[in-house]
Image 1 (cartoon, rainbow, N blue to C red):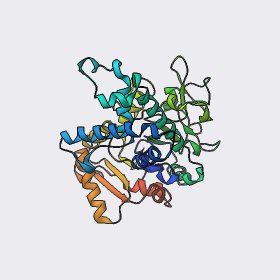
Image 2 (image 1 turned 120 degrees about the horizontal axis):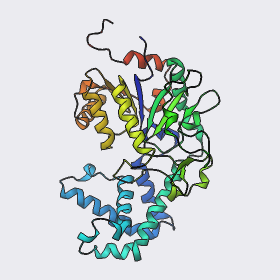
Image 3 (image 1 turned 90 degrees about the horizontal axis):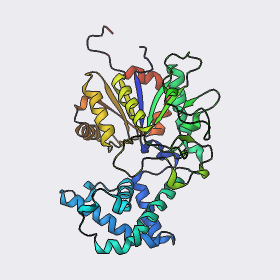
Image 4 (image 1 turned 45 degrees about the horizontal axis):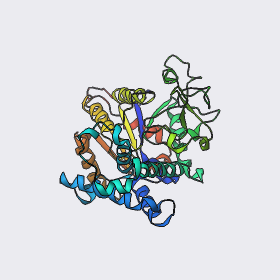
Length: 362
């Protein structure tokens, strides 16, 4: 069975990088709570964090959601801090008669503590994205193996800020990120992803679309985007990432372009391979749902850490409910990102999983 470059699309979530030493959202929360109790730079924000956490749980409780049903994670916390930090600039400010008096005391003058706490979290996020031992991400080399087997560029969409995919890039294996090089003289260009007329010899091996930004992205004074080789020069508060904000679609390049490309790629694909994504992003879910509903044979392959077939079936049913599609549109592969990407002949296996039209003679 043959396949084309548009047939298989990859979507990477935070779980894809866990084995590379980059923590998941739940682990980040645990780490922050430990820092708030033990580290002197974090202790001043202990009460503020508890107040924000309690408010998030209270809000969820009003909607009938309690315990594990409360959508509490690192992004929820930072999103709350971001909205609170806006203070008088928030469009809802004129409708708020008065702030909670305890919160005002914890936030300090002009909500300076809110701002400082959010920046401290972003600084820690940057550190989390830069594990000391980068060799732990060697399983990402599985993408190079897949590409060599398929012999066409892979279209990989990532919700992660880390550099695990970019580290695959070399003279023999090019990962296209939209930049011709590093620094402000090499600004992001959308045309680099539209190389349909290029010869096979000049095409990259991977087109990488970082839907939520990257820790090595920066903007110049004209708001033009570029990437840097040494992330130390990027201030944690200046990282161009969509982190901790509910509005995931920014009205600026490259975010709208990447969202459009993801929609187009999923609608053209026959198999969408999902690794490490928890199906908690409503924008991504809606596009996956649309892709599955517009083609009766299109399928989503989900790599999920399940102990057995029963757990895999349960996971499939949960995801089907979230996406509001029939469970037979989904395929659950038991395992982790590492075990999945280290398989021999994975490219051939994916081609074999590509569904054929019902009227196909093969």
